[in-house]
Image (cartoon, rainbow, N blue to C red; front, side, top):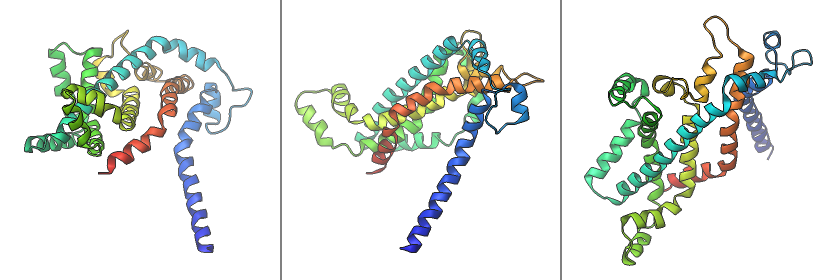
Length: 275
């Protein structure tokens, strides 16, 4: 009993240590977003005192980011890409599970292999191809996100769909449902836990992505929040106070989205891993 108590105490201490490591960057970003530049360079870790505390960073960052316009760009690109990934990945995974052929196994293996290819390896040829197709615009970047996000999503859906009894689909077929009706009326509603998980993972990735938007839509009027925040960092000076305030503003929407849907993440991944 004593050894068990000591073990629990050690694990609790270790968990607290890990939590501090993960939360430290958030603490530094949040506290320094309320400081003047002098306050940041004087004491990075400390809580802002009265002489360095200011709310002006958020007001200035809100204006410089053109927050509403940049927010809508990020929102439209993120929601469109996530929605397309969910639709196409779920349908593809369903067909791969139900089609017991060598081709379906090969395609699933191909999607798994695609996850190992880094974006940097195909970055320049992809941008060159999309430029020739005149798709270096918001529509083009949504299609690119669909391509890059589908592999992991299909694999996650694939594991989850295996748990759905095929008898439900056979009964729907007897009742006269076609393939689309079977999927949208019978199968897709059962995929809610994993769909929420996939939506969160893809939304967080796309919302925070910088490199692909930098290459594809780095033009006035199309820029997302991560792109707009980049301009707080000049060649010779960095406006850390404004950059951190802008970072906090950009994190708020995705944090709210995560908090509302977090209970489905572990449930979706756990159920999808059980065959």
